[in-house]
Amino acid sequence: MNVKRKGSKGAGAVLLFVSIAVFITYAYFLLGTEWSMLILQFTALAAVTILLTVLGWIGYTMLTAPSEEEKQG
Image (tube, rainbow, N blue to C red; front, side):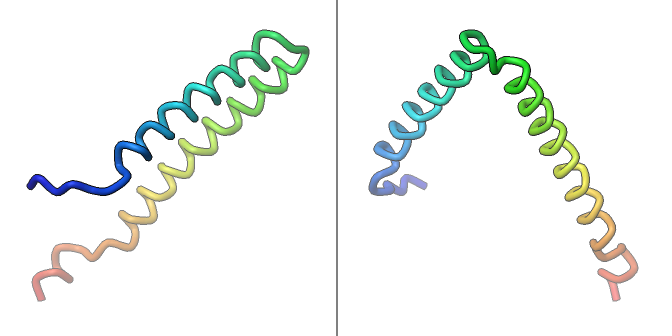
């Protein structure tokens, strides 16, 4: 499948530059200001939140998925 999407290169460029800008800003606040401990705490909180959300989503999906008996008849 060789489907060309309009704007995908432009969107890719925007994503690339935004991610670099966010990284530079994050590094500045982490290393160059007195806010470093707060930044680390928010980063840890975000990481744990994302991990537990994914685990909860997997658990919910497993809980609500039909069993093999329900699929067959």
